[in-house]
Length: 450
Ligand code: PMP
Image (cartoon, rainbow, N blue to C red; front, top):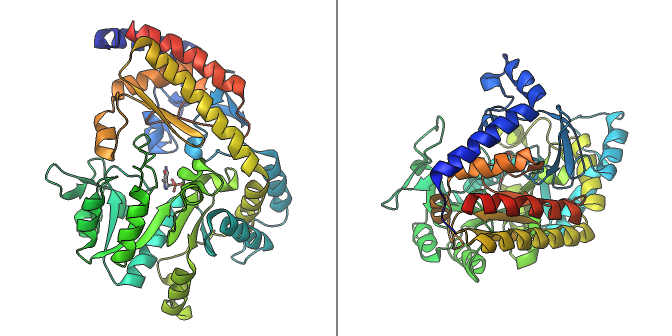
C-alpha cells in the first residue's frame, strides 16, 4: 500500500480516456469543428485540460454545470475563482439585468461605484479604491505606482508565484539563487532579472537580502501561494514581511484575488495585514469582468501629489472599460448580497468537510499525499509533507498523475481546478456535493494505491 505503479496508472488512464470519449461525443464534434480558433480553443491554456478535447459547457448555475452531451457536474473549479460567488448568482443577475438596459459603458462613473468602494473599504480596511477589468491589470497598475512613488526600478515576487500575465512576475530562482525567466515564459520584453528579484516564500532572510539593496519598489505577493498548490505562511512570516518592507521603504502589495477564500476581507482581514496596496479580482463581480485595487491613505495621498492631471490618461494606468456601470452594478450586488459573512462561514465549513473526506481516503491507502486548506479553498498534493515554498510545491507536482485524477473526477461528474488539485466552495455548494466528491475520491485512491 502507498506506492504508485506507473504502468497501472497508464492502464487506468487509457480506460478513462476511452470513457471520456464515449461520454463526451458532442464536445468532441464541436472541438473538431473549431477550425478558426488557435489550437481549437478560445484561450490557449484550455488545451491543457485532461481528456482528448475540452468539455463544452451548455449551462452553469450555482455550484453545477451541464455540458453539451447532457452530463452534469459539481463544479469545484468555479472558473478558477471567477465564479466563487456561484454561477449566475440571483442577486448579481438581477442587478446586471437592471443595468443592461441602462447602458453598459460610458467612461463616466455611476453611483454603484461609490457603493462598491465603500464595501471594499469595509472588507479590507483600505480607504481608497480604483477599478480595472482584470486582476492582471490591477497588479500591473499597482507595480507602476510603486515604481513611480519610490523611484526604484525592481520588484520582489515569490518563486513560482502567479499574479496574472504581468511581465515582472514570470520569474523563478535558478539553482544558484539567481532570478531567471520562468521556463514557460513566452516572449519576455526583457530578461526578467532586469525588473525582478525572486525570493522563496517563507524566507525572511532572503527577503531582507533583496530589500537591503535599496532597489526594490514593491513586494507583490499572495498571503498564501495558491497557484502552485496551496503554500501556507509560517507563523510570523506575514508580520515579518510587513516589518521588513516598512524598514526598507518598499511598498507591500497583497494580491487577494484567490486568498479572498480566507473570508470576506481575505487574508488581509483574517490575519490583520496592513498592505499599502491590495489587489482583488475575478470573483467580486459574480463573474462579470472586474477587479479592484485599494490604497492606504498614505499611498493615495502620495499618488495624488505625483500624477499631473494633464498626463493622467496616457500614463500607463487605466483601461477604457474599467469601472464601467455594468461591472460596478455586479460588484455592488455580489459584495453586499452574495459573498456575505454568512456565506463565507458556510463555504468554509464545507471546505473543512471536503478536506476531512480527502484526508480519510489518503490515510486509508497510506498514500504519500497531503491535503491542505485556506478558508473555503482546499487542495491535495503529491507529497507527504506540506510544501513550505514554491520550489517544494513545484517539485512535488506530477503532471501525469494530475491529469489522471482530473480525468477520473471529470468522468464521474466533478470538475477540479486545473492545473493542480484544488477545490473551491461557493455559496450554492452543498454538503451533498462535498459528500459525493468524497464517495468518488475513496475508490479512486483504492484503485491507484491497491
Ligand atoms: N492574481 C492571482 C493571485 C491569480 O491567481 C490570478 C489568476 N489566476 C490573477 C491575479 C490574474 O487574474 P486575471 O487572469 O483575471 O487577470
